[in-house]
View (cartoon, rainbow, N blue to C red):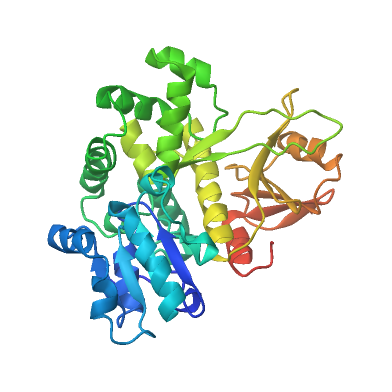
Length: 385
């Protein structure tokens, strides 16, 4: 099935080379095949090609006839030293490269040439709401529930056996990204770490508490989190700290990159709309939409959250522009606005929004309460930020 993605590679590559990072199975190869059909592709997962390039990086120049043609090097982390040749060809031939990867760890740790700004960076994420197929075939609430439970990885969305796909995906991640790269000494311990983290998605991180549960040191736990970020499996959300009336917490939150991977790690194949997990999944969903929007639209605003030491909280702060709270309720009570109201006293941003399951937009004391689908429509139409 044809899936239209928001990320526009031809447009990005008109004037600049790019690194394209994304977890496995997010559709990088599909997007390249579909939107860059004339590109020359070097797939470094091909062992024979990798061997030839290791022996002679100059093969790229020797084989190239048209320097207006985009050159794709897939899985660049397999041979980071090739970036020296890429750098030379950008300078000498004005070549344009798309350098893809499912892990940034080797690129960061190898002290390799990262092209000194000659290539910019973009990311491909799992399918967001706007990209989902089958939109006209099912009620929106049914599609939303399916997304909250099974996530947006294209092979999962299109599969008749989504749970088998997700189970295989988590095993593939551990095998290919962790075991094969020898990133951790004790794989079993890391599997336990993943199980723990899946229960803490969207919560503030207490490294010491997690370390106690695992029987390891807090620095080891921090390294594990860095590993998840470097292999693009998760991301930390850092707190907004500019408030003056109420001192903010300093601990980050953590989110996995996909809702279905979270469900798989939790071994949870059902999701009741009245459960606490549904509320967490709904917040997680909005976090992924906001993250993808800021990346795809190349917005520079940081995505953060705010929590005061006295317990007031706002789920997301977008730069110095928007404070946003997520509520899975179909009727947002005045009491549930207390975090936004406390943050509003700081006058730190211009707009205050609640994303909810309410049926219509309404405004209460300057706080806009959006139906979730209307909010996403406004977001992707660039009328929110």
